[in-house]
Length: 489
Image (cartoon, rainbow, N blue to C red; front, side, top):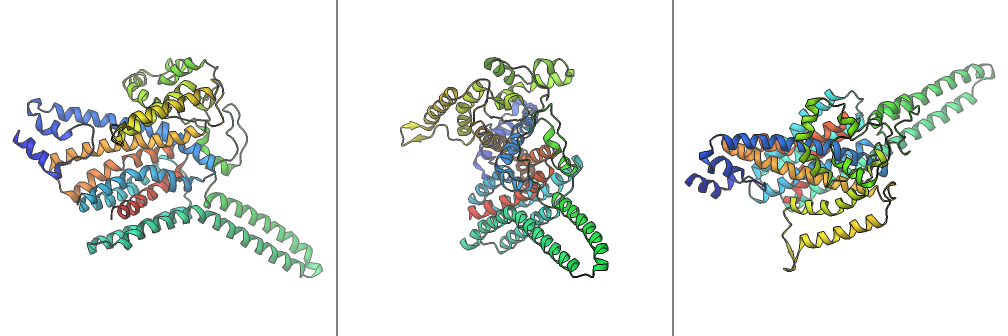
């Protein structure tokens, strides 16, 4: 009992905002022997499975749909949306650590996490998928990451940061985003202008040639101009930021011919994002559709599954239900783009309630009178009623794309909540191992806070979006370093 009270009194033994009292399970229940340790290990495996399912089946489809709707390239999506989703937990953890006077822990976690993502995660992406790296994007991301790391390290050595220096972190991040968004368009415009100038100069040189040689030079000139055009086109496809297809996705049973370059760049779009079969299936009623959405597999798929796959589906059914009921998914490869009116209406209520719970604000009272959860519940019910009245069961409404944005937000909320639990659990293991703040930050916290980066980026790479994953591997740590440190100070 005395040891348990001592652990509660020490700030170094604080494991953060975890749902479960992990320190109590390890130190305050001595009569249980090794059972608490075994249960916590099983809980850690469950968290990893939930994290992987959230990233691959919910966050990835949302990112693809949002990127297409905004006409963003893979690289820009990785630098902005995916980097925000991956880097937000790191930035929040950094702010909390610095404001609680544990700067060494925060800096160690930032550099340890960045090194982990830039080496382990990038290496696994290269192993999992064969693709051509875009030199300009890679050099841009690596250059900014090195500059940011150097700047943070210099200020850390000086042991003081002024308000102006903290503001420079935010300014530097805005510069990075500006270069990432507008840089490819500027490079492409410069290449086109250079090609036009070269073509005009070449035509002028032909027109000033002698008549006896004009025919020969003209033939050679046209030949080389054609080669330059082909070279410019292939260079633009391979080295500039690829654009997602702007046309609506083709139905699964159609197979339109595409140029070889586009087939390489967008090969992942031919694969259903949620793992369902692409065969055209019969239409169901809305309540039958709801039951099918809640099931981990449809009847014809269940009969063809291996026994161990069926066992996995049964064991992970609670995880599947929790995700399906709270995270909307828009998938062009699914039946009716995954529209299910009862489920989508229900998600209007469950999603904001879950977000309140994850951020620890369900029992906050507005003005000391109205509970926040009650206000959110009323707003959710009103939104669900509006969805029910303005849509039909067998055709997605015009605003169905908005559910992709909601799905992205809720996927990030889930990943943040799961990562928080993983970090709290790993902190408890760190306390059990009695390691220092710096070492704890560079190992346990770095691995825990960047589990989302590993799972999400690797899932995107396997589904055919390696450029997006590569950009996020560097943009996420840059986001955490600049905004986490800049806001904290």
